[in-house]
Structures are given as C-alpha cells and as structure tokens.
Length: 436
Image 1 (cartoon, rainbow, N blue to C red):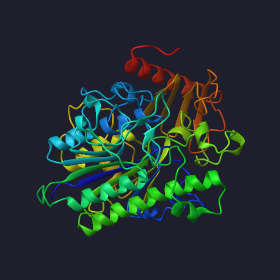
Image 2: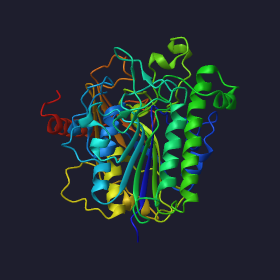
Image 3: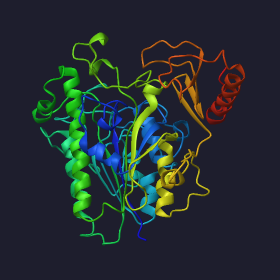
Image 4: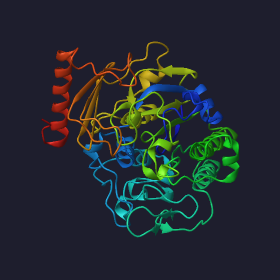
C-alpha cells in the first residue's frame, strides 16, 4: 500500500462551541461537519497549551511545550527567536522519508531564517511569521513598530487587499492540484494549513458577513470568519477528490487554543458586550488551563483506514499527531525523544477505543493542570490572561462536571494528594524546578 498523504487544518482561537458539529446553532459549518461525519470527532481533545506558539510547537514536534523551549507566545517582530533546529518536526521527518511538504498560513514559531518554516522542513511556504496580521494589508500592528508580514519562502511578497483566509485556501488548493505533475506520481505529501481565523483583528468580506446578518455585529463577524474557513476546508477536500487522492489522505482539523477575551475581540472594549468565540459549557478562555482554554474541537479523517461516523470520548492531545502520522506512514517511532503517543489503535478500533495516555499535564504562566482518567486537577487556575489566580487546587470529575463548576478536592483528599504529587514530579522533571 502506498504511503498516505497528510493534511493538518489548524484554526486560531476557535471556540469549542463554534462549529455546527459541536453544537453551534448560530454558525453554519457544513464542510467541517461533513468531515466529522466521514471521520472521527473527538469530544475530549486537548491543546498542549492555552496559547498560540506553544500549542503549535507541541503539534509539530510531538513534545510538551516546555521541552521545545517554546512555552510562551513568541514575538512577531523581525529577528525574533523561535523553535530551534534541535527539535525534529513533523515536516522535517516527513521530508526525510520522501514526502513533499508545504505550509500556507500562520507560523508563529520564529521570524529568523534559522527558525522559518523552510528551515524546519517545508519545501514550500506562503504566509506570515507573527501571531496575527491585518487580514487585508497583511501588516503586523500589535507589537512595537508595524511591519508587513507576508512571505513566499524567504522572499517578502505583497497581496494588498486580498483576504488572508482566501489566500491560504487558494494556495493549498493549487498545491494539491499540482501533485503528480512535476514531482512524480507516487510522492506523498504533508500539507499544513494553519488558518489565522478567527483570531483578531475581526475582519471578514461582505459576502461572508451577509450570511449572518441576523447576528449582533461582534458575533456576526466571528461567524463570518469561521464560515470562510469552512468554505476553505471544503475547497481543499474537493480538490483532493478531483485528483483522486481523498481516500488515501489523512486529515486532521483542530485549533490551537480556546476563544479569546482579549480587548481586540470586542467592538467597544467592554467585557459585558463581548460576543466573541464560544467555549460552550466550559470554564475559562484563551490563556486558561481550565477546559475552555485547552479543550478543542478536533476531527480526524482517513477514509482508507478509519471508519467514519465515530465519536470518541477518550482523551487525546496535539503532541499525539506526530507519532500517529508516523505510524500510519510506516515511519519508525521508537527511540525518538517525543512525549506524544500514537492514536492509531484508538482510531481504528471498532469498539471500546482507549486513550494512549494514563495522565496528561499542562503548564502555563504559573498555572498547572493534570488529567487522569475522568479526573482533572487545576492548580492556580486563571480564567483568561487577566484574571487573578488564587493559589488553590481544584479537582473535578469531568464526566460529571465538564464545566468544572464544583471543586471536589475536599471530598477526595487522597486522590487530590496523589494527583498533586504526580503533577509536582512532572513539573520538576520538565523544568528542573519545584512547584510548592
């Protein structure tokens, strides 16, 4: 059997409740919903971080963010450091094993030549280096002096007036259409499509705004931005089908972290009128280690190998994507310094799928969290970037209380102490310092 292609769609600040297949009654996402219907939809899928750069580092390296040395949001200014060459990445591994590799969209893992997408194994790159850009001018305004940030490999290019989401889709479709024409019929590909939507600034063309004219403006523009992504996913999948590559292509769709409450998402800067992304029933937002900041919509499709229509309630996490790709592609996983675990057995098992993890851990800005089975412990948790954290331990049974509304720590002192101890041990191992 030939090696499968692999496409990763990665959104930015997408809420768990902002897709039709995850319960939204306002935002219509027929293409993403169809992808879920034809594949596996996860209910308990996690990012490795509640913010952009560390989440992407974990996705591409298969490691906890702290091990990648990218555990914070990276600068978008030119010359800013990023993910080093000391870490193998999904594109570099794929390229070593004969894959053609391409990326179109948001990088946010460094702005230097040494940390660029091309330096990490991508044959082709079109997009931007920073955490966000104006969707039409492609200028990064949010840190010091504004800089233009649109690149074709290492060359700066200009597409003023063209909507970034549509540019990303257009390039991804062109890449798929070009497969087999000049690189050989049997060469598989890895395509990374990290959309910057629905991250601020809140921009969308009129044709998308008109689809949601019945919603308040803030919510209307959020819905329009997500709808543009949904159209893009549909166009890429249709290109796969037209080229006869759909059956043998793995597709993963998710988002880097939960929805943002940052002031740039608000029309008038007042939180009580915030109509941004929807975290569903979950507590917390971007920047938080409560579920709203790290539990993400996630879909995995591989028609040739995975039965469609599945809903998996077992836990998975971004760093699992790299070893899962490697196992499906027949690339040796053993002896690689990664923390993720392959989900192949969980994805292909016809009944009673099991998570490959007994425990999962998180660390971000003095917050710590851990999941063990149905139980989750959050230490020093915040609700977003600005919320003042209390140095408390919260224990929750997520099957009974997915919204983390009730603290059961006093009811289960032995379990609380065991999880706290394990979390301390992990933190000390990964950082070299203790958490008291």
